Image (cartoon, rainbow, N blue to C red; front, side, top):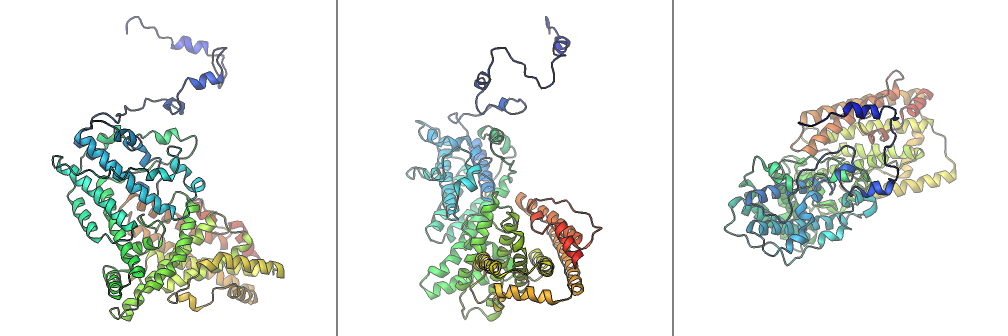
Length: 584
């Protein structure tokens, strides 16, 4: 450049004597002056400075191709929210959704804008129904979901403020075919949710939405097209007040496939729910026939996801066979505990009909019982993760875990043992080994402590015990007296016998954890990003647990590093267990 002077060396020389970290400012510049110089939310307030990409204003015209791309991106964010991601990095990134009241007041929107506005209204109503379903699960705003709201909208009621009179506009026949398909999918999905929430059965609508999704076409550059209409800097602006994770989104075909799965799952929810409300015996027989003899007896695992959704308070969500479906673990613990109490109602709804022979009826009942035991085991492990159990209660807790795990093994109906069955087998052995070690090395409690221990046991475990007669481990007593008898029998054994038993159980548990690791690896990464993450986490956790219990009985074994903080709290500390083993 002409007439340009390089001042780098002069600047370095002038700053040579300034210590590192010293603030350079004008004499009269104060802190408030510096704060007022920047706008809240400006990217320059973060560490590092970069220019934000140009944002597309909401009132600007938008063509049909851009509307389709925005709709697909909204569906991707919606699925991410339903699979456990917070609102801030998903739903709240949509500029159009956050400024929907302004769009509704537009005087003369174009045809494409009217289509997008109609889609946004129904989209918000769908999320409102999901929020209502979340609210049934004892939603504690400040504790659980403050990070989701992020201060953008006041509370959950704002999701329900959409004007019902707006609704979905009549689909304009002049709009291109692909946009009409997307509008029809949203309209049908809203109807399915509404019918489900009102107690109906949307079976025909589910078939229609499947056909529409099969006719969708996608743009190769949809992500680039929709980028200006979404605010991806929201996580950066909230970084200083709350941790907002980066949420990977499914691609549009996978996202719409998940919409189809949700619709199908809601249909099964209604089928199961109708067992208890239908006054007609013929209707109950039809529902039982569809549920028991449909796709489910081919492999009992196939019926578990809809059964789980029917019992959970968050029925609109996809699955509950992974530990990370909720970002907030206290909420996950409460949901699992509540679900365990509701399995009895479902088990009692299983009709004893002549159209089902004993084998079919027994397989279905055992399948429900096995899934209930899985839910209880998850709830107990999450209680350890949240440190809700004192060390003096470990003995009763691990004894109860061993009983639940062995009940799960007894109820297994899979044609080939699933990783869930192997997982229960491992916990049955390792929990019983820990209970034995604690029983032999702990001191006898006095009468006052005995009464307190009995009260704690009944308060903690009584709600998790099934009342239905089809559960196998109801045939044996899962009570405080049974626990005390087991503890006394362990103390009567010789220490050498106890030590050999513990070594044998630990070896068996290590083998079971290794089997879980192998089964998860053979299962593959699964169809979606969330399941990929779940499989990798379970593999790492199994390896950690396997190494930890080996360290219990071997002083030469190195202390393993945990890939996950919660796994370190599922088992007692290595040092305390080694001390107990040395005393045997």
